[in-house]
Image (tube, rainbow, N blue to C red; front, top):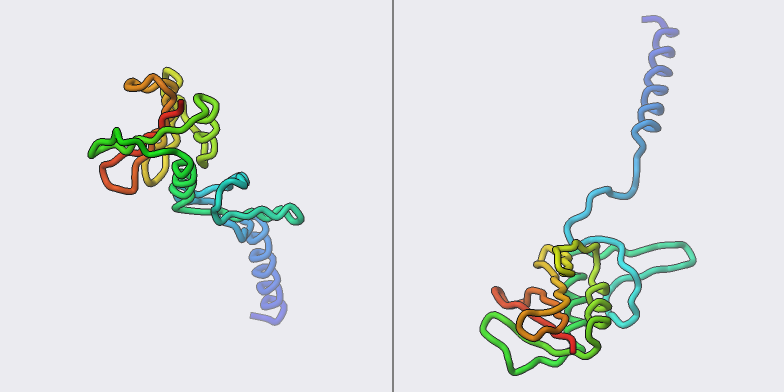
Length: 158
């Protein structure tokens, strides 16, 4: 192979490499995310590890435990009742429907409608359910799995 052919081969290879890099695009960010990951809004009443710097639009993405941290924050302002069972931890909280929906919306992620006003948010640790009217107390209720296996936390809003 002559010197000219080597140069031609070198430049064609270089051009192909550069062109394929530009066409494929290399990104420093991932496209996939595990369940319970996402960009969350800032709620100053929560003590969680997320930040937003408005000077450069940096957002920290939390994974794996933000739903549980948020639920624990919501539950911390409720009062545990004596009407508990081996499978349910019952809590009371004031504010009615408005407070129940506010707390539901504090939990990260989109929701799904399940009929009769019931809303669901799914996480790796279970499903948060909003009932506009519970069957036992006729009050708005949020239900989320407890950290104890097989036990559900229920906050009833009066």
